[in-house]
Image (cartoon, rainbow, N blue to C red; front, side, top):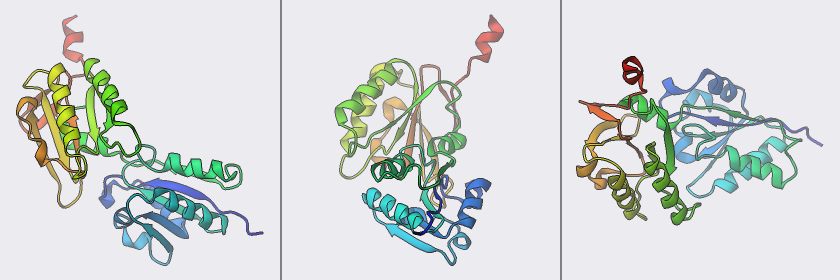
Length: 253
């Protein structure tokens, strides 16, 4: 029987080669097989794919992708499953473990997760300092989570005055979800509350902008965007967004 090789789930970061961590690069260099969604495969530096077996699948074939990666590792190939951002944030680290668990392979295949720069951190860096205090990440996609649950979580986060980072904010199939989220935000935030919009962070089509909540136009948002809604103390500074940590208050005390 062929000895199983390793399976790593690797975060590629936002997409630019400069944002690929040295650890991720080293694991990709050692890999014999690389699997991923075809758009994420395009984000891997070409020299790291040269001479390797490639497994590429389309949207909504995540389980098949993980199964194929597990099969490659079982066949003795050091395998990497790539994700954009960080593999543990709305990505495939969890599903890969579920597949290993369902097949009784958790203790048979050496498994590891290699962190990447999360989309929320990439967007925050481009906006300045919107996440300097407590924040919550919430996805608007109801493909795997009931919409009622998403609304409940978003309402709780807004009411508790978290900065809210909105993943998967708007798609052609659910254009109204973001409108609902913004309506909720306007219940708990002042009109001038800043909203940061980052699209295609660290990619050639990158765009970054800061808006007022009361006049924000949701139609400019798509699935390649990430939205950051400030808390009650967040403010815009020209093209930047700032959420104070509280040092000024500490000095006053």
